[in-house]
Length: 307
Image (cartoon, rainbow, N blue to C red; front, side, top):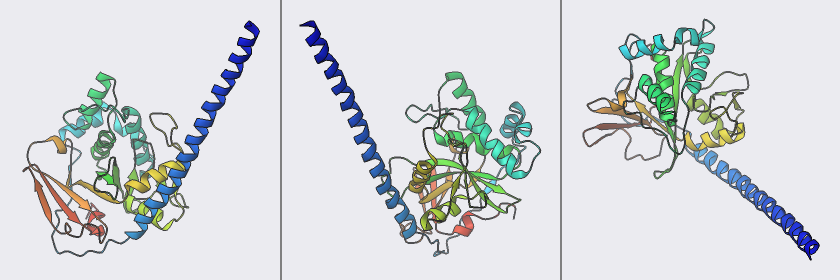
């Protein structure tokens, strides 16, 4: 009798294991299928809305960048020895080194990010370190943006947003200006990632968008990771950003703690042609706190900050 029970238990155990394996394989098949379908959908949307034809005469505000002598920037630079972090190498190396530093100095949290209160790099790092918790991508990007500004490198924290109005998730990262390449570059400190063309030249957010839309060669930096763990493949990261690179917004002024300071804050939104045309060339004021300006002037959004 005991031997029969053992045989039944053994068979039952095998059936259970086979069932679990079958469930996992089924989930993987559906996940891969969903990945392929949604990837095609996002690429199709980017392809459909590739152009940025300037169709309004509304004068947008000039983008401004605070000087590195700002007290919060100077304190950040001194406390974390950002001159040494950046190094003495070529400008591109310095830009990448600072991105890697921001990636490592704070941990990202998807499900339970901490609200640091004042949104400046020093406070974000202090609160996250003290409470041993992660922050969202916007806060990680804020840390990197202020690191660049502290060394006199022009940069803006930008939010990359999907096509849908009722989107559930977007992604914030940093657009940093390279004097050597004479263009804006995309730096994602959350994933320690950036994109390159087939010649390994780092690309900007709109260049990446165009390449995804037209399915041109697009390389992802080698060490893409999430808090040190390689949860996402390079293909998955491309798919993720193909969702988010539909439209962009940022503040008109790049300075420490801009979003939590008193007074009205101005945000500039870049939309492609024929997307929400009723908003283009207009500004909306929300609760006397935010002014949202909408444009499809790509050249304005990508203007050389040194001119």
